[in-house]
Length: 430
Image (tube, rainbow, N blue to C red; front, side, top):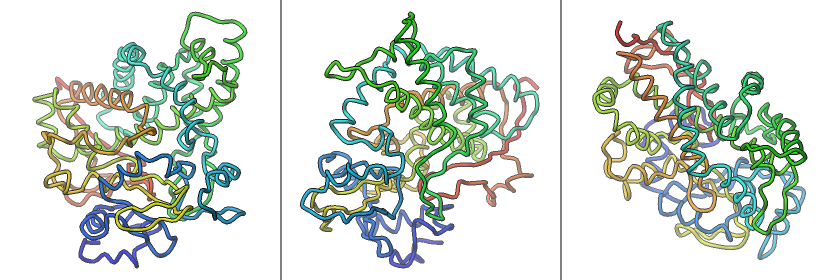
């Protein structure tokens, strides 16, 4: 599909497999012609424009996040009518996906829960986590490098991201294998499927609730000098103590976000390095550019293509009137290609000065709190992978030749990334 072939009144962004596998032509057409567009099939207002997306992000009093991980169809037993439908939405919260997760909360509940979360991801704690990230990267690579080939997503990315969060939260080392086993039973991203199947995001990761509830109760009864105790005794801004399940959900959300975002960031980044010899050579010769490379990757290939909001009150956006109850989708994967903000946005430029202005981690009150951890995981992983190999290639046996790759991609309007990524490489010094 090319940009000139797109008729947005005919293309179904949410179910079209061609758009799911290669959304750039759709993004570019919409940016050039309809940066804010009400698609006719579901009535969703699709926002591709950068500045228009920022308007939504910075108005949580107008745009609720209750449907953030939902889909184009909102199936409620009541009509969303009235000048302000906030109360109706909250009364029917259980009908929305991941309704008990912080990502779907609005202020003031979101404010209280985010305060707990940010207490777990302090700069001091992130700095303490760095040595573990480096050592864990080497531990995984110790097993993978001698093989000369790997399926990177399951052999490295998924396990690495689970253990990174486990260490950040102070999960005892003896429990790490339990988390890896739990990961093996998790289906991965289940939201944003092209069949538009309704689910409430009940994955294997949410089985962590029981684990963290038990730990919180245990530490409140028998405090220790550790991170889990700090989590257990953390209070809301008003001084009240959260219920154990509330803390457990916050912790589980970090694991979930890692699997849905950081795994894909690792896969997308390493795929580009393996597929583009010029980029690979640049990063090998100038490893200090790895952080810039990651920001440009996030700009042009955001792991989460977009997220939803719903209007609580009447408003307008990009010349469209939005009544209460309007389902809005922010396509930050498209916003990173907005030529009003990024020069020659279709070009991958490691040295792009404003790449970090991307919206891959959101903005406003829902800016991804785990972004510093995701960046650190990716930087250390790429550093060590490049240092411990002399060359990395995409496996032509599995993905075909350069210029005609057959990638194993997530079939989703919401997520972007690889379900499998087969690589071959030469160990350093060979």
